[in-house]
Amino acid sequence: MGEAIRIFVTLVMIVMILVIVARKYYTATAFLGIGFVVLLVTTLVTGQSAIAEGGSGNALVDVFEVMANAITTSLGSTGLVIMVVMGYVGYMTHIKAAELFSIVVAGPLRKIKHSEILIFATFVLVVIVKLAIPSSSSEVSLLIATVFPVLIAVGISKETSAALLMVATAIVWGPSNTLALTAFNGAGLENISIPVYFVTKEILPVICMIIVGTIVFILVNKYFDKKEGVLVSRSELPELKDVKELGIPKFYAIFPVLPVLLVIIFSPIVQKYITISVVAANFMSFLLVMVIEIIRKHNIRQTFDDSKALFEGMGKAFVSVVSILIGINVFSAALNQVGGLKILAGAFASAGGGTITIAVIGAAAAFILIGIGSSISGTLPLFSSLYAAFAASEGELVNMVRILIFGGSLASAVNPIAPTTMIVSGGCNVPITTIIKRTIIPALACLLTEIIVCILIP
Image (cartoon, rainbow, N blue to C red; front, side, top):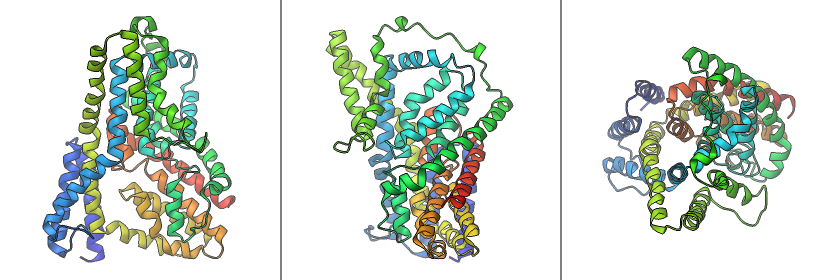
């Protein structure tokens, strides 16, 4: 296929999925169906297998192998984290610990009259937690289980709360930033120290993005809350329950956030000797709570019966989120085989101009390409022409990569097929289109802020 046809097919795929999602068709089947059809047609037209190496030996059979690989990939990484986290949330809800946590935290926070302060504090909290949990999918899953219910309890609409988590988790930074490592390798800067880069190059832009992003976010989401009739008045909030009505000890309020605390404690920002995965932290917390439940209730059978809530929660997570990730992986494989996004990346990268022009083109290109469906780690190394234009000095090249990294990560806040989008949409029960229209302007404001800061302070 010619380049023009590849770009056209890519754009048609993206428009089709946006239309189908907007019309509220079952999302998982929509992604899976479009991806499968495109893979099949592309294979028949080009005669090339969708699997570069290690295929079945038959190009048509490889189309189905792509689907099998999508299931394996979805369950083996992000999907497993989501299922375990949501399973733990289900268990916390069943034993009423989640409700207790919301009551205990929301009580003092309700005394803060201005919701803007709570939104700003949440934005800062989410960005800081990123230092301990670099994976956006893992972080947002934990935040939905802990922060989201509190935001609802203090009177912030679920639409605004969901959008807030999306924008804040899109700021990728920290000494464990694997995205930076990928980008630097693509630019030929293998000797860059990520911790040093974090201290010298990331902190100032992130602070500026938090300030500007929060202000714009509040203005945009207040507008949409009023327009959509979801603005919550403090006077209309129901009274919080008395914790005694729940019939559980007050210290149970710590259980919902226990996995988050474990991940932070066993992370490089606290100590360097022991690390723990999100999945392990949730299972450790689950088993600890089970032991405490047995001691408190003196009833092993009931505790075991209650534990079923964990696995029921995992099943619900598979249906609502992981199934969509499977479809997305098939859809992404189809996008990669068509190759339109790669061609667009090359076109953006070949644009010339001065230092500032190239920086703006790079950030805008990364934002657009990733925003319409390309992966972050797969896109940034493609900008070889832009890297070459900045190769006059290592300092300029590092700054260029910094601009691209922030531009690419911010795009995940508006990417309709990003895993974080699916997790937030499913976990918060908010349509994807509703989330994206609330995140795109704050994300663009953060993008413009990071470009200006990175240019003025290289």
